[in-house]
Length: 413
Image 1 (cartoon, rainbow, N blue to C red):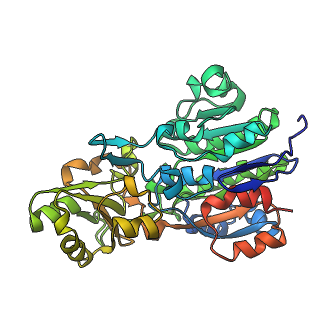
Image 2 (image 1 turned 90 degrees about the horizontal axis):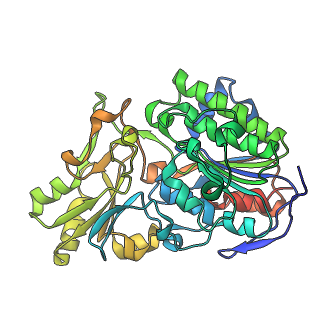
Image 3 (image 1 turned 90 degrees about the vertical axis):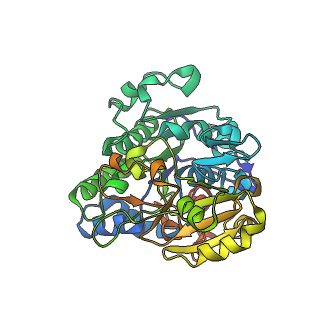
């Protein structure tokens, strides 16, 4: 590999002083800590276990809502949703009076660490499993950016490289598969080995975690394969930091049926018309969660009812938190102009939705496993190299998953 730039750069109030080594940050989408623990207990996670011993492993707090777009945006900017503006996969744009996907970089209000690193001379590559993330993650990036989902469509002028499949050595995978995430990691290995990148962000997909519990053989085999690819990144000389965008929990009753509260129906039955419930987890991947998560926002046409509605919702079984806009902005770090009048979070085993007709549970590949609330907020952080003294102290404070670039670049020795 040619010489690697060590020029410092600053973005969103953070100064990065990169070493002359490849930097790789991985978002293991949907990876609750128990996936790592159970796979390790079966002896099938040798590389990540070694990283935990010689480097660092701990727990960090993610951004809320604990959804993909929100946390990936936080990871690549190093700041909360209140700053970068991405507050869900889906939201109600009050100015346009439209419910829209938040997949476009036009909604991003902060610069990215990736673009800043490229401007400072690093060879930057973004590889994401889901095409929906590519536009946000590649915002103003002079580098490589493509998805596993549409790797066969990558072109030099739009993605930074041609022949992605040939470079990686694998064909474009099905998005609903383990291979979608493994392709991303294999792409990272290939890009480093071929000297095409030295500063990488690799974002996986949570299809496997939505579909399989940690103790199942399918999950164990997937994590074992993932571990092997991460080992190759370390062997290639990279400093590797790995975290997750959110955890994952079963959202079912004791009999295995989905445990759903349809909030818009509940409110209409109690108070009459005048409510719009938005499910920010909504995205194109219908086999994952049926647009059901543990966080919704409520828009009221009659603001005079707000306190009454808030009090009533707070007393409903399965609902654990209800916040007005001012509190959500402060406590949940939300952009004020993009959140609802009320924000509702549910219990660990409960999802909140809109009305039954908005949610197609027949598309699920397995039982309902989902995320979005407090119970998926805490996620692992693993760093391949030892932390220096300053970052050892930070690690035992209240680190966030979106500190992962800071820890990986500035915190290792």
